Image (tube, rainbow, N blue to C red; front, top):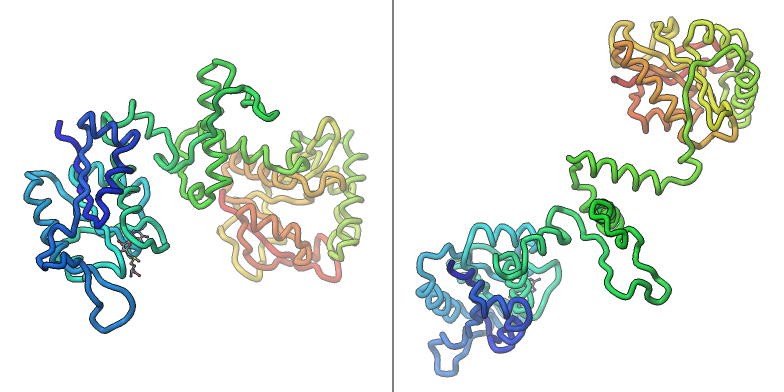
Length: 430
Ligand SMILES: C[S@@+](CC[C@H](N)C(=O)[O-])C[C@H]1O[C@@H](n2cnc3c(N)ncnc32)[C@H](O)[C@@H]1O
């Protein structure tokens, strides 16, 4: 197979050849996998002084590389290119930023790159217009010349050429190949400066090691490059599970508490009334004019229990919260200043959601909404509705966070008489 060929047009071919002739790329050249030629632009001048640059038209600082030597140099290279698929690239701070995807494309679509290194103020624009296929930048900063950028492109493209690295996995497993950063690497000794190698890597269990590394890749990308993490599409169940694990591990301890829902029973009434009192006190102290005039009460909760729509949430055997999930239409919702998302009465309603004081600010309220949505879906309902006082900031915020749409204002004076019986009404399609 013909080697992948890269010609670099430069004013400093010797120093570039020295760098590129070292290590992996140098060895690959010797093996014949790649061919890298650093070509002196100055050799193609047509003036006695071998001058490659001149003052810019219009005045100003610096010198501009002349089009003629560049074009003659390129013509010479092309005369030896045969039928190769060639791409002429000008290394420029104005080009498209270089990255692994650009490198993959250059490796896939071409077998010959000509990398043009500018210097001084750059090159005569007419050469770019006439001869250059694309401009590539090493990043949003300005270098004195294109040589460092050209070496970066040559190195990155060459390591994907078969025969350059020992195995394809050497580059497909690395940072940026599939939108992730690589996992952390360790070598001997097992403990250095009191820091031990992660135990998972010492198990000898390949599957454990693979899973640990995948999780670390996700974790590192999230921490070091949130911009990359945001673009990831988690198509595999395994990645989704690992991301779930990472998110869970990072939750504050109070949000890690787990709650078990079960149907509330008459025997729970004592504990539920205690929670109700705490909830009322919390609303009162927060200045929320809701549940302050006797509603909800024992009768309402007992009626929920009797109808099988009262749900208790337990944490380690202790009742932490309560809600009523009703499949019956709510008469107070018939009139709304605004508009519900759905027409008709095929919705479920969350009533009387309350948490014991010590379980406030945990995942309990989310779990309550989630249970209501599951139950509603199980009953073939279209949506879940809920209302709350406009001053109940926590509840209004939670509704928004959980995807409930604000639909308008309903009047609950027939149920919960108060100075202000108007309630914000929310609905979520399920
Ligand atoms: C000092 S720069 C010229 C910058 C040019 N006057 C401008 O402002 O766009 C000289 C040469 O360095 C190279 N160069 C500078 N920054 C680069 C970058 N970020 N990526 C690739 N090449 C760069 C280009 O070949 C350029 O012609």
